[in-house]
Structure formats: C-alpha cells, structure tokens
Length: 395
Image (tube, rainbow, N blue to C red; front, side, top):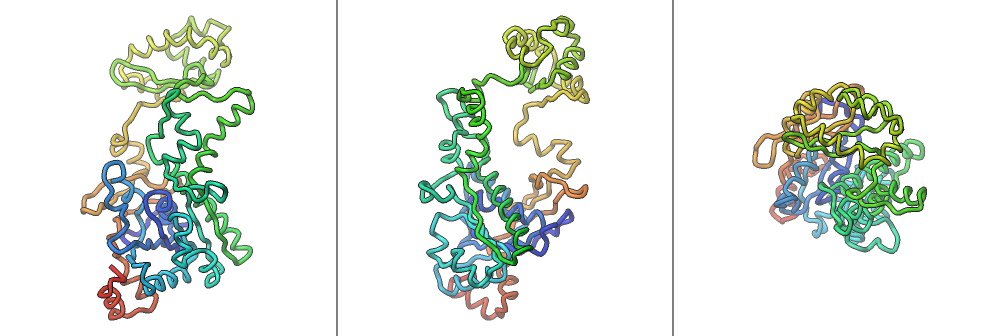
C-alpha cells in the first residue's frame, strides 16, 4: 500500500475485500481503511469507471478510495472468479454495492461464500432494505427525493437535493456501524453474518426529527427555508461585505448577545427574556439585529464574536477548506497524490482516538497496482500471474 499510516489503526489485522463503485460502497471501505484495515478493491478490467467521471463526479474516486490496494480481475471468466473467491475465503469482511442479485449471479453472494468462510462479515450497501422497493434502482438523489430530505431542503414546492452526496456517505457510515457490530458479535460467536445498509432508510432516519415534530405537534414540518425556527436569532446576516451565520440558542446567550452589542433596549424588555417569547416577537426583533450586523465587516464581526461562546460561522465554500487554519493545524486534511501525480489535501476521517487523528500520505492506487503482490500471497508464481494477464483475466 502507498503510504503507511501514522495515526491510530484500531482495525489493523482485519482484511476487507471490496466489490464497489461510485460513492456508498467505497465510503465503507474508505472508513475501514482509514482505521487501519487492509482493504483490497477488486476492480473490473480497465478499472472502476468511477475513476473517469467528470463534473460533479470527478471527486468521487480520490475522496473515497484512499489507503486501498487494487487488483483488477475479469469476474466473467471462471478463473478470475475463482481468484475472487480465494480472496474472500481469507478475508474478514466483504463490501459490495452492486444492484440486487448481481453478486449472487456471479456466485459471490453471502450464502455461497459463507460456506467456505463462516467468519465472513458480508456487507451489502443497497438502495433499499428488503421490502417492496428492494429491487428498485436507487441513487443518492432518488433517496433524497423519496425520503423527504429534498422536500425539507428546498423552498416550498421546489424540492432540492443537499449539496453533497450526504445519503451515500451516511449510508456508508451506517454500513460501517453494522460491520463493527458484527465484528464484535463474532468475538462471542466465532461466526460472521450478512449486514445491510441502504440509501432510502438512511434518508428516513435523517428526517426522523421532522416525523417526530409532526407526531409531537400535530402539524407537518415546513421545508427548512420556510420553517419557524426554534430560536429568534438563528439566521444568515449580511455584513458590509460577506454574510455570516449567527445563532442565539439559549436565554443565557441572549443576555450575552445583548451585552456584547450594547443592545440595552432589547435586554431591558423583560417580555422577551425567554426564548419562546423571542420567537413570537421575531418580526419585531430581527430588523434591529439585521441593521446592527450590517454595520460590521465580516472580519470585524468575527473578531467581536470569537471567544464569546456565541455560535457563529462565516459562509464558506468547499475550496476555502484547503486553507482553513483549523483543519491544517489539527490534522483535518491529509496529503494525497492524485492519479495524475499532482499533490493535494483531502479531509481526514473526522474523529480523534487517544489524542490522534487517523492520517497518512494517501496515494491513490493505480488500476491493478497491487495485483502481483496479492496473487503472490495466494500462492501464484510470476509465470502464472503473467499468463493471467496474457489471457485477459488480469490487468
């Protein structure tokens, strides 16, 4: 593997075989690899097509395929399929996110593979969990539309998907949770199992707060741009130059906010000392607050808010994160060598363990870069490996 990890590696010793594409499945492997598992991606001849996506898909491969090894096999050939089975026989975990039934048709379904490896944890990342929808083709956007997230994100009557692949990624995170739960159970039983996560059910879990709101209040939740906020001051404000978000979410913070900005008249109004009363008086309060904030430049306002405990955020763009001082000083970005040899930085797994962040130089594997090493570990000779290449079974 390119780049040895220098952060925590709690999953060292676990071997993962990954049959995936796009985002959801690779996210599972990326998280496991970042935590020290050995992850081998089985790519088709010519490589995973995700490598060559353009536009909004051009970042998928470098973001979700670091720290992995690559072997490129023709799974339509019996010999290539046999090699894949051998890999799984010696693995702890299999991850796949192909269409329902695709792995079974190849003879790589859980029932077939678990007979040879009863400790195998087989993780399927799908559009839907078993049920009436399970054979539908799903995408992140499909799930956001079906599950109510797009409705909540856009203005009324204008459903809008979130600005990143949030369901693919969180669906993959739930897949990792299921895998780690199965690993823990295997410590007790000695046996693996099949686990699944899905896009649709992940979306519904994420909008569960709005379902609960309906249950509690009897009133359906409005889309976020039209919602009645739980707090009076919880909005984006325009400064002299750039916008900024400010949230005043407790009564104690309201007192602090009023004193910080010398809002003596508002603090003197005892009728709005409590949050719910401020929400009711929002139309009266907000014009004064907006005029106040408009008198500051963004940087001056940040200087004033810094260290006060008041929640605030400048409105940043993705490209701003490359130079973010907190990320760069805290290990939140790791060096990555892209397929074209260029150097960049991409987000590290957003956790800390024992005071350290998982991080490492993370060159992306070339198509089949580790094929020879992986096959040699299976006992194949150099001549046998070369014969596989000549016959088109191996890249």
